[in-house]
Length: 169
Length: 193
Image (cartoon, rainbow over all chains, first blue to last red):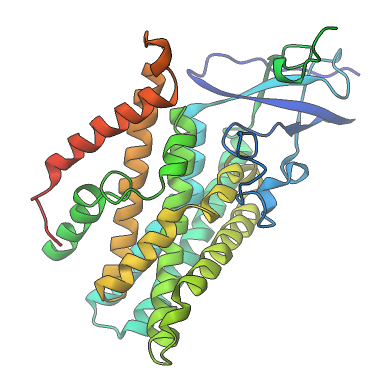
């Protein structure tokens, strides 16, 4: 498999994460992110209800992504992927900031022209919809420019994590 | 306008959700090991708190109060929050699957974040109009995000500092949080709303 791998470490600080290769196709490898330290991997994971609400984001299959990786990697290999910190902030602002700005702006405008409370609520919902549409346009542009695409950085440490290692007899 | 500015300062700084009301401490300690995760979590929480509080206000005004169903408030608000998180997930996934892959990991944590429910219940106590409620919820969540990012920055530095063995990790984190809370007490007296 001849794939061109773009290694770019010039983008300042990178946010790194581990992922596992689960499949290959013509355009690259499909990677599945490993659960982060934020949820599901702490000591209280068994008793915690944070993952039990049928959330789509908690299902790792739903978060698979395609990436060009070196040809010598195989299914099951763990790799480190990175993304510029600025891209994460930009993405967070696009996905959440713009719709919120639309919601608040439309609501405040509705209130300032003296609309009734239900109409102010409706105006806010309209602003939220407008903000979401704007976010969609900007997100499409970010994706087209490759600003939010993760990059292959290196192969993750091979071997078993210390906590999973069997004790020697 | 002055009233809204005071409301904003009061909710974000004086009565900060984390450091003055002690809500959302689980995510405060759990997701603040790195600044980038704190930013992602903060933005996602800001969105969910504002949207769910807006819906909670409508539910309270047009359903619970008129029909005398106040005893169902907590259950109803929890349901609204869970629905708002699901709505956010579906929307972000629809708006941009790439952004969903980047930011979606934080959303399941928000459902069980008591700060979201706490802000909604505080709104009911405040008897505010719709826009004041939305501003209060937005300002509270901005205060939450601000503290998350500040604390994550401090913890990133603490990770490199020499700390006595018994204090390493969460203990020194709690000490830092208490100092941060003391610093935020300096805002008290600016606004009493």
